[in-house]
Picture (cartoon, rainbow, N blue to C red):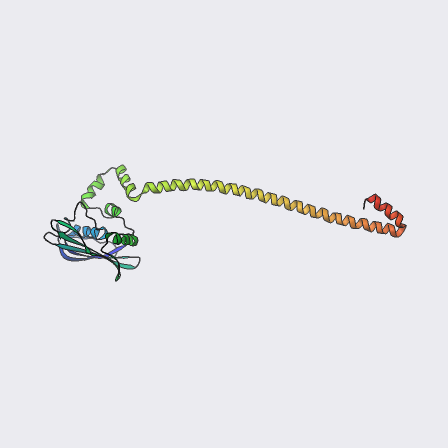
Length: 248
């Protein structure tokens, strides 16, 4: 995903601002209180629509009754535009759901319903709120905390965010399935080898049997030739006697 531009109306120090983003690395430079962090807070609000803390008091410009953030971004060659609004109601500030809209080019994908917009946004970008707030965007107040934490605690937090333990469990399960597969493969490989040996032996027996049958037929033909020859030379009595002796 690439953010192309963001528009802010009555967001912290911004009355009405448009901030474009170029391809590659972007750096927002400005003096104290000029609204650098406001751009990042506004992007977070547009993406997820949830306050950092208990309310949106930090986000709406002081004295304003309403505000709005529009983020234009691209994903897989498609251009999207996501708008969220804020509205002051009595002493509180909440989302203005009439401003909530997600467009793909000029086609409206979802509006007014937080769950519908959130579902579409995650399907498009794959962004997770916790992962975004802890890894992609490290807020100033959390940077020192992140640097000062122990390696073990940092690893634990990364495990929670990325679900590393789930991958380790999956890998262990894959390893057990691999061992089972190897066992089955070796069994069938051995079985196939034995089958090949049996087939070879059967083939050898068939060849031997064919040879014996051919030899028997040859011998029988020779016997009949001999009997016919005796009959021709000595008559029926000697031929019958020879047949009896030969068992033919």
